Image (cartoon, rainbow, N blue to C red):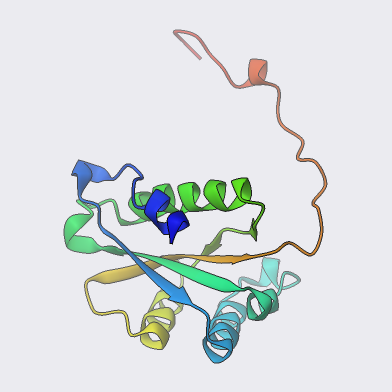
Length: 154
């Protein structure tokens, strides 16, 4: 719960604090989430199966209340999700950012909503599996700051 407590402290448009966090531990629900993600996976990403969701200790589905989001549904969810991911990493947990929302494929969000019983007006936006990592990922190559920072003008 401390990870969720940190995530709910994220910035939100007009301080609407629109978040709802659905915590999934059921093996059946994790398997169904994996099936939904695989069904709506774009063809260019088909080699990245979501079957690993079945092995997560927990899955957090970050949702937002549209009424409290001030037109910033996606942004508000991503801000809370970022804090959740950073807090999980800090505690030695493995995780990854997955979408539960796609403007090109509204069925993804609809199916996640139906599976989890999310009421109308609440939008599932991200899926965050949490657990002990099976491996240590390779070091991430970062673009040098000098190529990203521009003072006064681009």
